[in-house]
Amino acid sequence: MLKYLDPDDLPVGWKDLCVSLDSDIQQLVDDGIVKNFHVEQLKEKFGTLRLYFSADSGYSETERLIDDYTHVSAWTCAKCGAFPADKETAGWIYPLCCRCAPENAKDLPPFEPQRQVEIWLPDGSTRVETYDTSSVVARIAQRKT
Ligand SMILES: [Zn+2]
Image 1 (cartoon, rainbow, N blue to C red):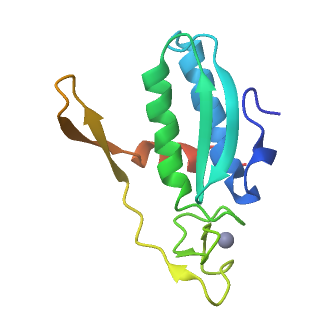
Image 2 (image 1 turned 90 degrees about the vertical axis):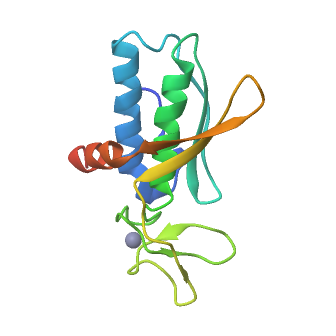
Image 3 (image 1 turned 180 degrees about the vertical axis):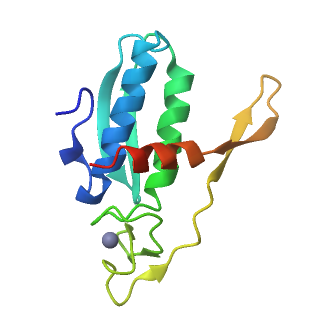
């Protein structure tokens, strides 16, 4: 039983992702960064984990954490949890490993730990920031059930 997230809302292969994200959110709460965290919705969308939430503080820290998990989920086999998955189903998009993928699955591009985010600045211009998700990948592996 997790504190915030229900793994049943996600593909079965993402259970370890869900357990690890739940622990990371708990850590932000324990550290006093996030107050009054509430899950609005947890689901799979376009083959990635999506978590919508509300909080009285620590919104940007939590959002960045969740976005790291969203990035990693795109390469986590939705059936067995193998990482990095190297296939994706055609049509209804899901990442799958080569053992779980059907014959007609397409190749996924190789996993890149870096994800890039476009930040809007007050003057209307944008700047691209790069976040490294390697530590998230490591924590998920460490906490595997
Ligand atoms: Zn698999």
